[in-house]
Image (tube, rainbow, N blue to C red; front, side, top):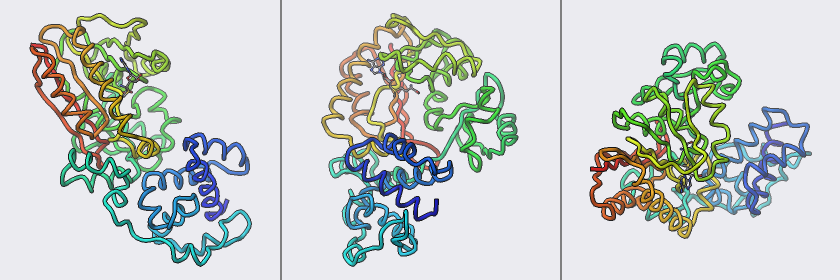
Length: 384
Ligand SMILES: C[S@@+](CC[C@H](N)C(=O)[O-])C[C@H]1O[C@@H](n2cnc3c(N)ncnc32)[C@H](O)[C@@H]1O
């Protein structure tokens, strides 16, 4: 496919997304109907689509509308591309620009437009991020860096870097997180690399790794209460060098965890029934808006509503409250979200402390959305 034909394909996928289809589904449909497209074409179309979805609001301004065509025009203008070399009208390529399209479009004017947020989220981002809100929104509208966690159960950092290099994957140590490597050239080959197959590394955002690295020392039993796919369960097993219990209200989410644990050389017990404890440490990586990681799932940013936020904060409070019975005296309940919003973070921890005398907060960490990782929050709540 020519570069312009890839743009036309992205326009069609974006039209489907704007009509309500999830981006992944729209891309899969397009790929199935476009057998002529090779893997590089598919990757390029996907990149266009996700680049637009991260910055949909500002690109709609620049492109003069929110159709797939206007959004791609906005992206090309933002990148300073020669739009007439793309909108050529040739076969499989976007039709030539009309006079209206040429004159339409303006630079983003409001904060919501410049920050690529729905209007209602702007005050929440300002409240949570203060002077860094603009920079963090800019990071949220950019491609996410790719990180892996070095699995200390099997290897060490330099050996992991060398193993990745054997498969042509560049990896550089993270400036603060000892287990994290940032991947460069060749990152797309990770899933086929020996280092991955042998369990030397696991894909995991650096802030996610940091949440586990920051946990207190612990000698007793450990539970991952919202284990999901088990990213943090595996990190816990490596961090503490012992067995970890894992549970999730939706057990189907843990289906791949036994195979992942086997590859990582970790012993994880996926509990069939709700655990009863007591545990010295319970990690509660709660369901959340995902606002700290929307650059990986930009569709979520545009579909999120105040009502969904209210539902989530109620669920988080319920999960935290029901987790209290699982923690041994002197033990820690570590609450974490990949959100930057106060109602899901500091306000949630404060409400917990008010409602549960006998608990104290021993630490809280905020991770900014930037080149070193996603936005994350964690609070360590200790049972006195
Ligand atoms: C943010 S995800 C966990 C991600 C996971 N810790 C990881 O690192 O890959 C939150 C998980 O909480 C689970 N969940 C929702 N309600 C729950 C509840 N009441 N108790 C336990 N888990 C719950 C969801 O099914 C989801 O898998």
